[in-house]
Length: 173
Image (cartoon, rainbow, N blue to C red; front, top):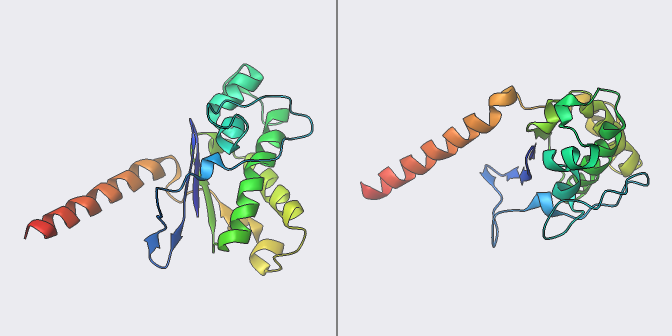
């Protein structure tokens, strides 16, 4: 499972050798989240207000704290609140899809202090219900940054473009 958390929130699920796609493309960034008890921010999503994207994307961080995320210190309260929202989505994904790995990328996730906070929140949310070694003892290798670092989005877009080009080229042959 891949999340990109930046100017918006995108979620992709790769299963059985292909991306999951249904009626429309998945809109995992718009799942509703419980409000953090210390957060009175109304959210930025024009459709839902306080969905994951409206509460956790980069523009929400900037609107809530009056500063871009990369200007906030690593110990700023923003990161605990951010982890709270992201972990709700990851916890739900673990329960719904049982992914073998969760990759969290995008500009917001360049804040490396978020990973341990999110992992702890996911553990707290799951309360031992999903009792696997990956979640109970090896969370640091279960919820991870993209292996391609900040180039992940660009490389993914290039790979999808090449795939589409090859399929179009095969169709013409």
